[in-house]
Image: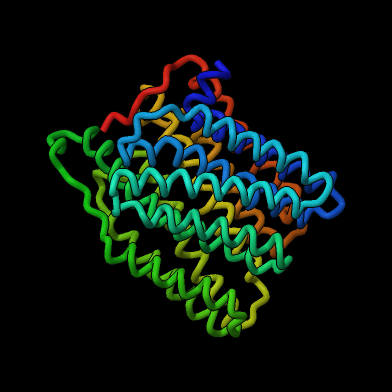
Length: 368
């Protein structure tokens, strides 16, 4: 079984990502500097592991790579273990090894894309290189802005990846509708490109230490574009399926989160941290869990029907984000303890379902 998990690295990296979610949540109760530790756990470990698991499955498929992935997954898992050990010495050592993780994933993806002459996926390689650069820039400069910028860089990655995932989910929804097998869902690439451009400007403004007003107006722009994209899903034949509803809610949280962030920066409301946590939990982590479900089911020979524990996990994840961002304004009880427990339990519920699925089912290629 362990051999199978490394042969198909999506499985080992997704489950390792859940382990790091729980580790990060525990840090709130035991770590002295839990602020730094939870940033490392969630930005430094969870995100790269999730990307690694997804892209080690997707990029070989997109580029028609027939080779063995086991040696690559073992090498990257070794970097992850080194990062776990190093964090007890200095978190920057941990970030360094995960920077090497990003570098390995970037080079691996870029080589496959170039070999296949697949220019449609250079955006993926560019995002990976940006993550790698931000990680090493933080290690060698110690400037937190390179960490904070990764939240918005994740949004660019989400826009790129979710464009494909939305087509898959819509197609599955159409299959469940009578007489709609031939229907086609075509998300707007104009909205996607506008949103990506806005996020690039927002990241540039943050890195250049622009005024809060400039950052605020750029965040507002990002938020309104994200809200405009929701209209693509305003069809009953799509919204009566649970996996589309979850994706819609995540998209709604993204738009609301950035409008809130923009308003807070412009009006100096001192609520920017709350908005960022809504984005980080309900959107970034929400998309990660959504991908875990979609990819985990499709590559295990299962129908795209989220299991009950997985559905509950997504609901608890949204509750964690609302607790930390909204309810924490009114009571300190919702600031750390409640969202940490909800966040940890949400991913543990997913792991309970999918450990059994991964153990009992052969890995399958994408059915499309």
